[in-house]
Image 1 (spheres, rainbow, N blue to C red):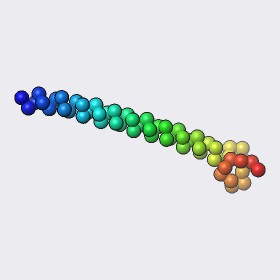
Image 2: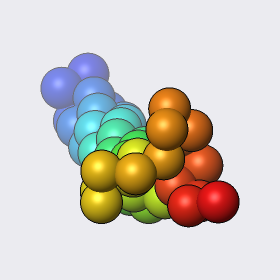
Image 3: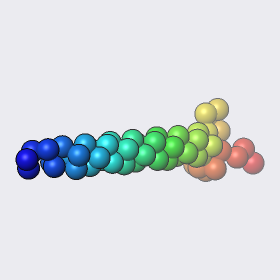
Image 4: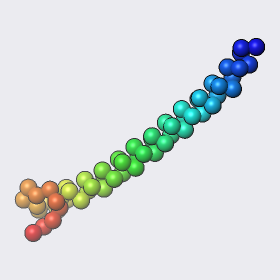
Length: 58
């Protein structure tokens, strides 16, 4: 009888854990994309910049 009671509690717990991890993964993927975008603007790709990290050719 105790086995019947464990099944309903473990499945929602596993589902909640899976949903939490999926949400965390989505958040991390978004943060990685944002950091990659920022980095793309900071690193000069044309050889100029004179040590500046803003990507601005002044």
